[in-house]
Image (cartoon, rainbow, N blue to C red; front, side, top):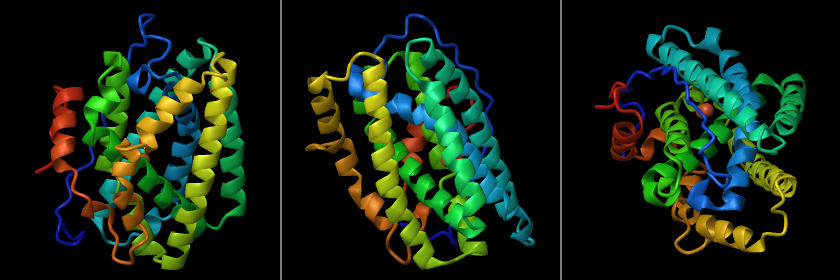
Length: 283
Ligand SMILES: [Fe+2]
Ligand SMILES: [Fe+2]
């Protein structure tokens, strides 16, 4: 483990991608070719554009309070740039999903309404605490995927694998930015832990409901074998999420920092595989 203070941070690169979503991408393009996991990933993709705009909004609120810290300011710019690119590519991916009968636009619009409401009614500190919690959950999912690449990407169409691989790589690259801004400008431990408890329940519940909605819309509502196999792959033994549960629990420690979880090796391998020709950014 390394401490945050002792770690020299790598710059956060903004990569401009343009994935070509072709007709040969199979109906069940998700993890393991599983309809339930495809629906779950579709629901997540539909929630990302509004979610990522909310993250950028929450972090940017504090930019003027960062003082004389050019490194953190540069990392905030990198974070916002990466999230903006994710939004752009997920919007394109969501339109691809719409064309296949997934209610991605409807989910997108609903998430936008929920988050606009939060922006209006929460304090900036609460918005940033929620962002920190959600960024930890996305980093958690990214670690689970990139540390078990065969289970996640093994059966995926190469374009879909590259699209998700790129996004997950960048989630790990910027995983500590919102946290560092929070520690610098808010620093309320009770709020951070409360936000994670609330977000975990909310994130799990709404994503399962949205997954069920996608399953229904695409005619797979009663594919119980797909539900069982998908849930087992995530939470069973040895489920990829269960394996990563210590990383989730670490967030509740008072000395937690996102950089304590070492991901350099998984990141380097993933960048070499999914982003050949793009710059190496660690080390
Ligand atoms: Fe993102
Ligand atoms: Fe992120």
